[in-house]
Amino acid sequence: MKGLLPVMVRAAQTRRQVLIILMTPVMVALMVAVHAWAPSHVKTLSLTAVVFMSMLAGVTCSVHFVILTLSRQAAFAGQSSLPLLLSFKWPSIAYALDILVWDFFFALSMLFAAPVFGGSRLAASIRMLMIASGVLALAGLSGVVVGDMQLRNIGIVGYLGVFLVVAGLLSVLFYRARPVEMQ
Image (cartoon, rainbow, N blue to C red; front, side, top):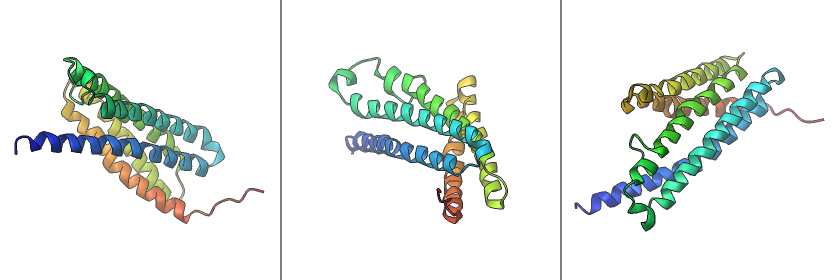
């Protein structure tokens, strides 16, 4: 049984890495849809949201792909510095980059996208939840500031819990919207 636990942990970590690599392009596509839907007077804000979400996707996919592939190679696995480079235990380079993208770039994407939505009750709800998602993600940075990584859970609530609701509401909004035909 003792030998089985590390195998199960490694399998769970692999699933997490693959899920994040697959999920982030979908998040970028969602923000592109927000930009396409945005009224012309807020297109600059929605484009900025796309840029920050794209930065998140590029960095996080790179980090998770490196961890997924290189951390298993004998040349890396035997290095005593591996935890400082490729682990999600504080402090490490991979963890610091993960915090940057999820607690900062994600937050900025949500905060720049929020002004796109207004008018209907559904759109206003999306706006408020995007603001909440962004603010909670930013609050996750407090873990780095005070050196308590448990405070990062605040950010996780923002970019996982609240954002899932935002994505669901966006799908309802886009489903209800009529596409504008190009002349």
